[in-house]
Length: 180
Image 1 (spheres, one colour):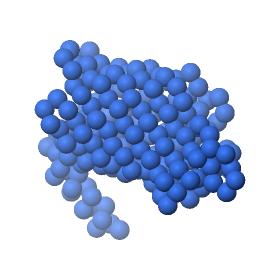
Image 2 (image 1 turned 45 degrees about the vertical axis):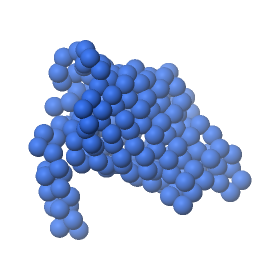
Image 3 (image 1 turned 90 degrees about the horizontal axis):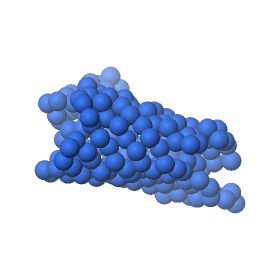
Image 4 (image 1 turned 45 degrees about the horizontal axis):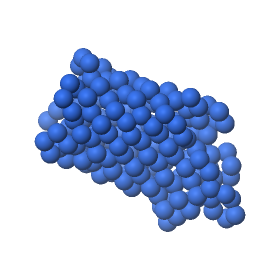
């Protein structure tokens, strides 16, 4: 196990010469989201984690993920996988392993448009038929290291064993973060 951790650390260090550390907070009408990441803003391997809570009904999502970024001119493409704890409070509590990706288009004036989506079908989840999440919006970096965001976040599940599908997180948000 120790050798694996050392190997992962070496891969992360070798994958990009300038791996930035970032922390972001987002607030929607009925949810809060906190994210931490290493390497999301540069080509190569990245790791990230986030915690999202629906403040209206107490639903929580905790995620840890990894993936690979590929920068092509003003476009950043990413593919990744996550381990997600679903605290749905409707009998759907469990773990899912969604796969997905994102695309970011850098625009003039330090603006960017981004979108990401992940899905875990039944064979990648233990308590639901399908877990889906999506996030998209616009960001602006007025001064380095500050980034401001506005967007829309959704997460939902299709029920299993007679439980209905339902929305976990849904709505617009504003947020901000720093990347060092």
